[in-house]
Image (cartoon, rainbow, N blue to C red; front, side):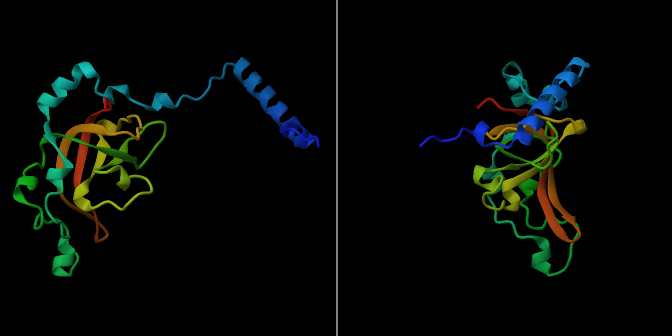
Length: 191
């Protein structure tokens, strides 16, 4: 028994559409068009090169999620049973003292926006907490915003993020959004 190829089983109008798309692409290219470049959205100065890594490491205190998650976080609103604004009540003093300090933290990127580059993302302690994995625990994640609105590359491998740490509960409409945030200067992807 002879089987049909994909081209033989396709309706004639589908072949006509494919041909039209090819011709339109050629005409567009001849008229001076160029393929869209998603890389144009990435600011490559956000990526630490190997030769500059030592400078970044010298100017940023290295932290780990082991340190950041070494305490059981209990949301203040749950303690009092009422809506709250900002409180450091359950965050230990040594962690609160990181507020405003230059730090670096290793983790996994979960982008919150993507337009050829990433401007905001969650840095998670575990790959399992990224994408469709387990929900993240407030002290095992950092909400990261690239400084100056710049966009960096999206990677699914471990990264090190360098920036200024913000510590303290942030609420939106009475709901806890984060306890850690960072204004990131750069990321290192050299693992």
